[in-house]
Amino acid sequence: MKKDTILAHAGRDPKKYQGMVNTPVFRTSTVLNPDVATYEAPRDEDYQRISYGRHGTPTTRALEEAVARLEGGHRAVALPSGLAAIAAALSAFAKTGTHILVADPVYSPTRNFCERQLRANGVEIEYYDPLVGAGIATLIKPNTRAIFCESPGSLTFEMQDIPAIAQAAHARGVPVLADNTWGTPYFFRSFERGVDVSIHSATKYICGHSDVMMGLIVTDEPYWRTVRRTVADYGFSVSPDDCYLALRGLRTLGVRLKQQMANALEVARSLKSRPEVKRVIYPALEGDAGYAIWKRDFSGAAGLFSFVMNGASEKQAAAFVDALELFGIGSSWGGYESLATIAHAERHRTATKWDPGGPTIRLHIGLEDPADLVADLERGFAAMNRVTK
Ligand SMILES: *Cc1c(COP(=O)(O)O)cnc(C)c1O
Image 1 (cartoon, helix red, strand yellow):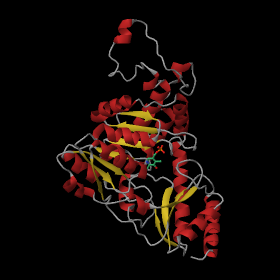
Image 2 (tube, helix red, strand yellow):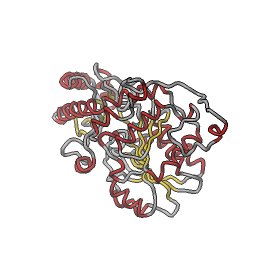
Image 3 (cartoon, rainbow, N blue to C red):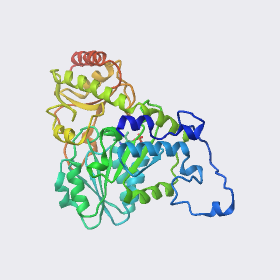
Image 4 (cartoon, rainbow, N blue to C red):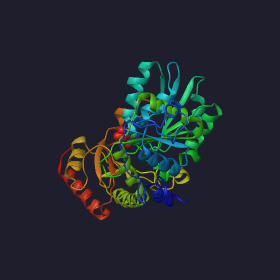
């Protein structure tokens, strides 16, 4: 089945629910058993048999199955946020006395989790240049238990050569974990590229409407139990209503993504021609440093990218963003609406430098007409040009 067909059909079975098109919302804590023997039978191995609300409901399973199938993984588990998914996935592998490798431009709360939680538990954390590729082999130590990737990198969009990293990692028996929020299970088939544990902030495109917080971890078969048990041990649980909304979002993931990519390319190309813009950083744009890897490994791009302002001051950058009327100022992305923020990437890295010669603006391009977005950005540049440095 092709992925658009999977989006329309996975995770639902109308025959089971009186012909209803969508898997209903199941609310429960207690699940009753017919007898003592059933209640006492081991449950850990039986993914479909739901024994307690904390472990999910048929609504949760429908979402998990649909996402795992779309991405080509073994199974998926839903968590209360993307960051919870990152924390749980890392915790499954990073134990006291082990070493993990983390891409330098990771989402900054991922770095905070590594620094404040894992390091305090005696895990050695080493940040690596996202462009390291096969060179990761020289950084792997006997106690390395995970290589964490995020491609492209948060805020600065460096593309990682994940197949090369995975080849080096697997030669030493080390699993590759990847934050695939930007790639989505639709545009980046993680498991075909060597990822073992794929992590999503479903808050972004999967839910897609800026109204749900959720994370998902998809794994290949050998790592499923380790990851699923870690999630269970921490007691993470997701509301069935949120799972229903995520499934609803998933149905239109393909059309939204394709449209948002087209819109983003149009806006990015128009920015390239502006004198105020020094550089547009969008792997889907020909000429971008990450274009070749993106083209090889991805079948599309999220509508999220950055651009660097040509020698502007912070004050001018703020005037630019403040003047925008269609772009909201706020965290997150992946909804249907456009967003703009100033990205302070230099604050969140240690292994590499970020000094692009002007403020970096991160844009999320929504489903608005791109001509209106371009006009809005022109309004921003005009306001910026009225401000003295
Ligand atoms: C937003 C985001 C997260 C965190 O997801 P939440 O659902 O907000 O917890 C993780 N990784 C990336 C790349 C993100 O953009």
